[in-house]
Image 1: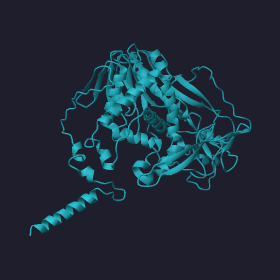
Image 2 (image 1 turned 180 degrees about the vertical axis):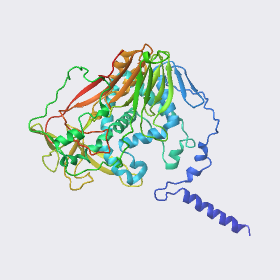
Image 3 (image 1 turned 60 degrees about the vertical axis):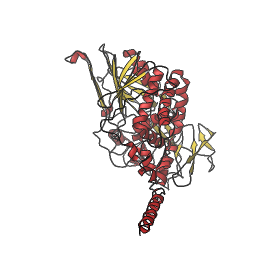
Image 4 (image 1 turned 45 degrees about the horizontal axis):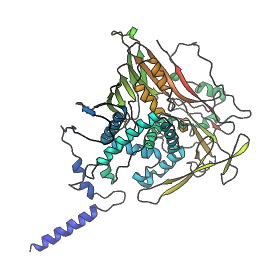
Length: 525
């Protein structure tokens, strides 16, 4: 009689193994996830786990020591910069690998590889926004500088050293749950992460498109009252009447050209439509030593970025014989973003400046091989985007590129099917830049002049860099590369999101000039 229970148990066990190793709709196979040998059980950690270990990596030039304090904040001590950023990359991957992986895939327009068909429209928008295009141009600029290339290479090698050390049993839990494997890192992915941050901090201007019909409701005089060129909340913190140097660029509207406003609203697929809290916003300030009890400056920085789990930030100390910096870093990118060293402290908040402009493109015919610009037909550039989709066939999208940038919206990609405009995006983030190295030099700044020289490399998104030094100097610069527009050209009040917005869709004229802005507000004391 024992044979019957045995056969029954064997059948049930075999059926269960078969069922758990087979995908069920959008649910991935759970066999490996539940496996005692390689499943999620292996990711369990004791409450008092020690992270002490000795590692040997053939790429290191010297000795590196890492001390984890009681809050698991790493303090990294290296003998040279390359080893320092190698270990920073290793630590970022050890504690935040899936976050880094997911963010850069989403930025590039690869969310469909994880989420399936539901993410196709999101991916199409990321491709049409030109996120990888922007990252590729930034990468070329980054790798022109041998110092920058060495630092980013070391950081990437550190991430890949951690990925290479993983066994199937100890890959992060998220990969097991989704039946995925970690993907090797590259300098391009770091550039993608920085462009993701640029889009996060300049994305509010996407309201340009859905609310351009407000021009048909209000007169021009009313618009000037409702939407001043610079709202009071963004006025510089300098005394009224302070003299500034004359601008180096004075843009003039081309003859016969003006902003054209859409009559139909258009939705932006990866932006929420609910209204934002008007009182929400980052802030930073510095108090001069002459106004403090200690006689030393006090610096405060409070960046209000998206609340995520895990956090956007990763706290750490980075130290070599030539510099010692402490603050928060961005997993996926080297350096300390906000922090202090032995001589100076700095912080950053979003400048909230509109750095996106949309242009209505006139193609010669339906082939869209040529478009009209400055009195002649120019050849269109094309990027064929292949979007891989989980459990489905790949999707292809062809994106036209003009002198302004990619054509984001056309008759094949719009929520308003009656809208047949071809709308291209001119975005400062598409320009070649080496923003990361601004932070490299800022981490090593000793005084006001080195702070100014460091942030000159920074272009997008525009940021308010607040500064204080042990010698008593304080300053705040709004640093970035901003479009030089003629009066009220493409006006967008990005600060007041719950109101109707006005933004330009330009039909004619030349490509707008760009200028670097390094406006020092209170200046050096």
